[in-house]
Length: 257
Ligand SMILES: Nc1ncnc2c1ncn2[C@@H]1O[C@H](COP(=O)(O)OP(=O)(O)OP(=O)(O)O)[C@@H](O)[C@H]1O
View (spheres, protein in one colour):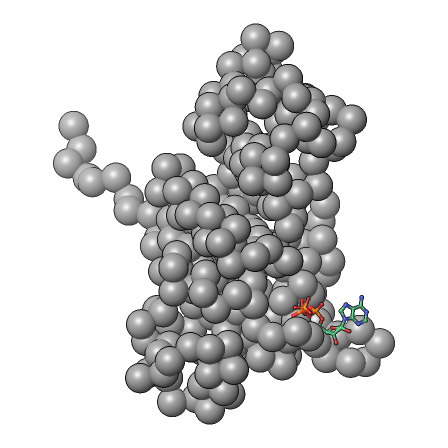
């Protein structure tokens, strides 16, 4: 018997290196570099127009970056074609503004949809998986209801169940607290933290909500004018000596050290 230990997984799940994207000659991403830490909550923060949405579209390879690398578990996905991206896309789950459920389908059908589209699972297996996810997120009782018949908070849980049903390794949240009052925002933060610890997924939270950084972030990456100006822990960012980062935090009501 070999006494070799199983190889430890790289603590960095995704490395983004010098990513650039222009539209009609205007450079929006001007060399984005940072790491997504495995199993952690990685927040990407930035003001309006910083390039957060453009970055998200490149990360998910919904668009082709002009240059740079996105290494997912060591594989650079930038040069891959749609066919080669199929197994990579399975690693990602996306939670778009936490909504976007199909209104005419029950919550059960919403969560079953990705399984029907992307797997050959049998009806019974689908039913079990869907009810398990809904149960994990405390919304099993909403299975037969339409999204319009449940509260906004419950709908977010159903949307998260749907994002988790294909068992992604990396969950990307696009502005999850955008447009919510502070109390609801913190409940959404709780849900993200709960999901991170329950499933061990690597979370990427794209937001301009500084409160989320300090409540749930393990890592914070500040995007400013198309570059990552700071990449550190939430504690460290309070002591940053980068003026643009300090200005953004102070304007967001954060007390600096
Ligand atoms: N398809 C596109 N074509 C041309 N310019 C674009 C395109 N998409 C984004 N931009 C420009 O890129 C810049 C960054 O936009 P982006 O939407 O990524 O900002 P953001 O950080 O998500 O801002 P917000 O928080 O307001 O949503 C903006 O100046 C925007 O006009």
